Length: 105
Image (tube, rainbow, N blue to C red; front, top):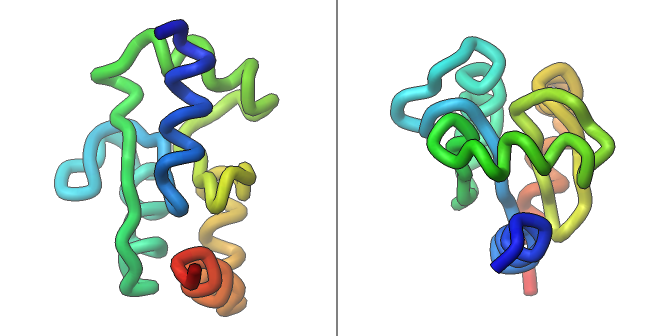
């Protein structure tokens, strides 16, 4: 499978997906740690892809997403943004609302 097809499949198959450095239990950068903390506090299941373990995705995703940095939060196939956007949405309450809506079928 080519890398863009793989990325599209990951985004399609996971209603809430974060591309990050490290894992939720062991983030490898402060931005990923803050983003995961905000998402986790919403109490919803989310999937993740460790871009440090998946170099092909780390290389291709910024161009595909038109977003140059990690983490990247995707909800129901839409790029929400990176750490600053996630934190702003968390502080305003928007993040919890968005994530809760995304898990309702």
